[in-house]
Image (tube, helix red, strand yellow):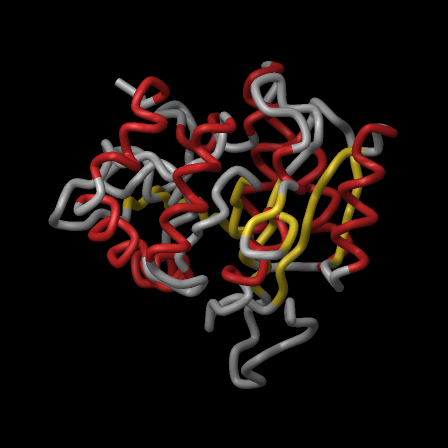
Length: 248
């Protein structure tokens, strides 16, 4: 289900998608293995990401903490490859995965984005390649919903960040150093004409999961973010469920 090995022998660039996740969320502990569409949420997300034509393998990167043992076990039971590393030094965790997989291009995603859209991921990968950028994202500035967050960077950019990022925040959140104006990296941003940045389909709170479940029930498990956004726009009673958690 989650792709192992090259999907296109003509393409010599190995691209992996790393989903970072842990059980110890302060706002919603254990959310990453909560049921979504009959699967643990992170497995449901990984299955969507695996539909990307430009991604060769989907990997879960979690911590070595005992609290993350259930997450690792659940992911492995569903055939998802798992790497484990430091809890707080997530940047170091990503560098470890790259070193072991020898990936050329890394897609970073977080386990609280179960409705990740494979077309958006493919478009971001293509944008980075077209602009020959070291780093690309769809969140700074944001025109996509919260919950579609995605970043793509080269192995070289990751190595530079791992060698130079010193601040705990930079290491916990992986990419702030790459986005900093003081770095030598070239960047690109994927944007869309219709601003959907106010739409919340990420899962930080139990109410968020209620919204995501309702959206899937109203559409289908492979629904694009446009289909989901359209359905939610037609059902304001659903978006009201997590309105208190909307980002300003």
